[in-house]
Length: 295
Image: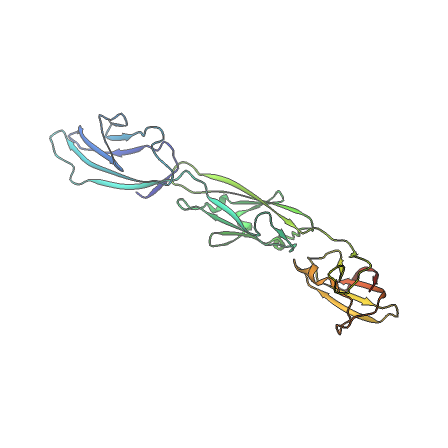
């Protein structure tokens, strides 16, 4: 009773015993809404055992099967004292999985991006020991992973794994369910996500013309590690005076901060001419160059 079967041709065996013998003509078995007797091709009785052999495609996935022996008598007409009933469940489907963090095919900026996968089986439940996660074709077994309710969680930093800018990260998971008979039902799922591409030292346009005409009103900087690391941009005049400091946070909005509109730290317009810029990441200079401001 209440077992789960993954057998597409699941049979039902029922022992019916009476020392005087069973009158097979009195046996009536009901499966869901179908009634079977020993005149049915699916039902037979031999050696005190009733056998039900289903026709092809009789069971369907997710079905709850209700079985009742509602009648049987011995050879002297003594009837079954009470119907015998039970149920079981059919499960032909493997667990379902979906990568929820990051979203499939998304572009990420964290080189230690957490990977979170929803993994669930509504009938048989997931067999924990069957779980295998593959990151860049490296296998991690069930005992190496973290779990939160119906989620499998992988933290790259726990394994010393760092994704590189521009990487395409392949993620696969293999899992099975745990029915009581036959099976298990297993499946493998796969996804990809991408690390934002690397940047070089650049500034454009150069020269630029911050005259509020919406054409070349600011100069855009890029630098190695942009999006992944914060940075400081320092702008000096030709006398070596620091006229502007721009802080650039990491993350997808970095490019919006890595701009200069030709003003100083007091938001005053600076005169046209040649300026020098230095970009530092984690205290190290990664880019230097000159800028021409024209008006």
